[in-house]
Length: 189
Image (tube, rainbow, N blue to C red):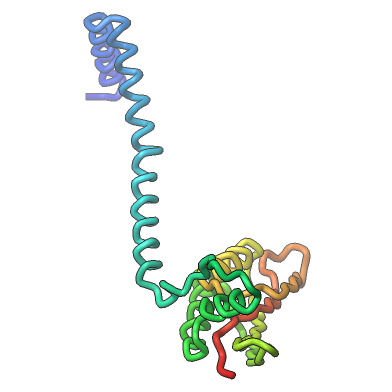
């Protein structure tokens, strides 16, 4: 059967169906088609998002940070607030895991890490250690932003100290960045 005949036959069948169903049938068919489009474009992706959020929630419940949240207390003295803050921080022994999460975030955003500068310092007056990290990375501006956002979201004890961006040539998409961050850890006095 050639394409012209097939088109004509489909057109005739559509006309016959319209004559049998009338306007109400046509409206019902249009509404059915629109609901199918809505289901495929909105409902299915939403279900996938809900499933992803449930997986993230489960991961957060099982994370080692679970149970170390800062909670409001009846005692609002500065000493109590500092103690609550210190309990929130991961222990100093977790530094390899935390740095691994940071490097995994960079890898997830396809950033090229050349080398890093790492320094450990005690914060005076607190039972806190500060692990200062300088990461020279190379990648697109969007990937650098996504990396910083992901790292700050996934590592609550991380702070962004500064970013320096430089592009070698105007037409290049790759950017050289110096990202300075600090990871705060529960230290020992």
